[in-house]
Length: 143
Image (tube, rainbow, N blue to C red):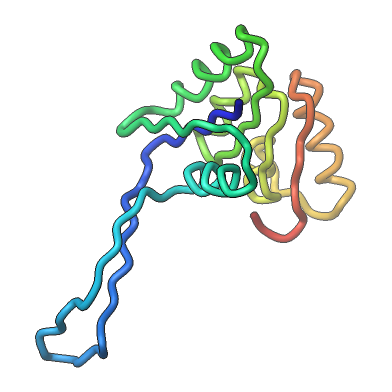
């Protein structure tokens, strides 16, 4: 069973109009609303490929919740992947997830230094691993 946890999920809307007319009332022909957010999207893909999963969502929480959820999951011997950024990533890695996936910008933020070049990125990932993170996945060009 895979659990995805979305903090501050979104309600996405898709609107259909025949055409957009500036300075006129535009009439919506069709509207679709659905849950959105990266982790919710992951659960949709897992469902599509037939993998059993559950999505949990929390609204209005603070970064500390990441660490707490990771610690609870690890105590239940679950494998944990942390995929977030900013303060949530900094606090979340204190719970020692098995895998994190920061991009280069996020990895730079974690180590407090702008990373330039493959060697600096690799060394930063190794430093993070030495803190107890199993795998650090990163891309050289964005998210």
